[in-house]
Image (tube, rainbow over all chains, first blue to last red; front, side):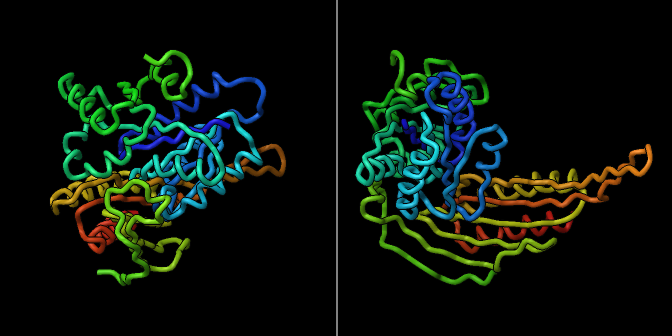
Length: 203
Length: 153
């Protein structure tokens, strides 16, 4: 079971991108396993919103409510991952974090507790980046640290200069990050999902 | 304001992302009314998670779905504008709207009859995460928004 932790600030487009990512992974999954993709949805509040939307897309979705999987429900995160592997053993598990979670913490938790490796992919909201960068800088930085790929989303809403500035900011947070530009409301190029999944040639 | 009370507060977490290891983050829980699934009942609670005000709301009502959905849109826009006017930052404000109608088909001879429930049962779930305003204000904004939706139904 390969794991992708999908993070990013609130409103960055995680759920929208997740639907495309999940479809890509299903289409490119091997024939060996019955379950191609399972989604673990974490929402910090007491009610779920995105899980309903994702189920409407036809995917198997498990929930972690009422807490953040990087801290208050970190134990439940590990339990859920172990249970999903035991009961479903999908080729891919995508964990969508809350918009206030620190994916690196979740990655370390999964590794230290049960030895699961994972990749971190973070969405960055191009439209609100400049507005959020100063008041939310600690959170934005903390979310991007340790990421394998950063997808700058909503690129259709800003100009080239703004995108270049966002890329520079991201590289200051995580110099090793592979950065891709997307607009998740439109079809995303295959090479972006290859970068997310860690397959194919990373450009 | 609402009947808020403090339940739990952990050590400060700050910007240290390794909170899973230290068990940190900063949490404060505010609880409103008990769970309510019956028609017309409104439930809103607010938690504090680090700097975030996490508001959860539930409302089940019976009425015209199109009118309710239009009012939901109007109220969400209003909430966002109010948060901004208060100097706050909207992380997100979301409402899911699940609409249930009942169609009954029946036949005794050859004619198949259809009876439809006159109104839909609409279940609303609100999830809001905002920053830089008081938790009580965040909760009250959500309560007012859902109350306005209930009033329009």
